[in-house]
Length: 389
Figure 1 (cartoon, rainbow, N blue to C red):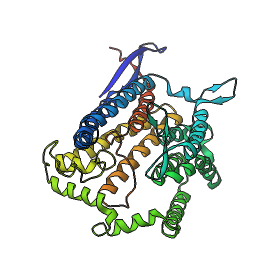
Figure 2 (cartoon, helix red, strand yellow; figure 1 turned 90 degrees about the vertical axis):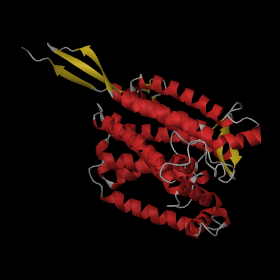
Figure 3 (cartoon, rainbow, N blue to C red; figure 1 turned 120 degrees about the vertical axis):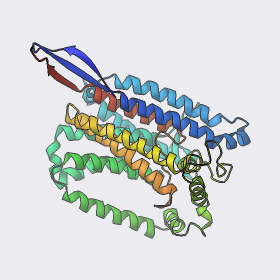
């Protein structure tokens, strides 16, 4: 559903229609609300057991969702092209400033971040924690879109592409030290935006093949690499002790059948799947809502991506189109990786399911990101001439 707002045009007998994609807005709200329901369903037992409050995780996620909704609405009503404007005093625009801030935050978190599971990924703000890698995804989308729209034809050469990717490395490398899966998502965003903007694509395939070999060598040949251990678990999930979480998730998926065990009736969430409300939430969805619920959720993501694609194709300028491409790649890659991990199609890695998994930073930033796409849709205008009788 798209709402049109009519404005006067300088052309006699014509009007200008402004578009605001309410379909995208409603799908986003539906996914977030569905995520809140599933977070309560998956976490209530553990929250009651450990904190004597069944709604503890739901409350935290709900607050983040409300803040994200406010940010999404506000951002959607602001012209996205303001991101290209410069601060005259400092000769720097908002897109570049956001990129610089995120580079600083990624380095900062490596030294002063809150450690969890052996890695520093969060910054303690006192009243809550903040994961800068989520903001870095948005920063890369906006900054790469800005760079490319300034000189789009530079991507027709290998040197131009390598220059853009080298700029992305300032964020990708510090992220990779703490979280390889998030670094892969950010790298996919950079490559995806450059691929769409370039007229020549053959060297992208060469680069992807080379990068794949390099990552595989790093995983298999790296000294004392826990990632190599994850490969072994992936290959022998039934026998490896550390394959327990994935194996329990597979049991949950298999238990769901066609229509599931009904909402709230999952057995595997009762302590069998560790932190079921986080990255493994899709397995509980499969158990409680069955194949029907899982496929319906995936179709909702497809519809969400379709609306983003349509907005990108009809954007008023290259900057808006590339922002939509970046958001499309971000959400698509993250959904694919999460579902692939929980179904043991790829080695285990920590990737949340967008809008659904528990994580205040993730849901807030994602909703603000959708707000930017809505801003692009809000700037689309068409002039319609009235037919004379």
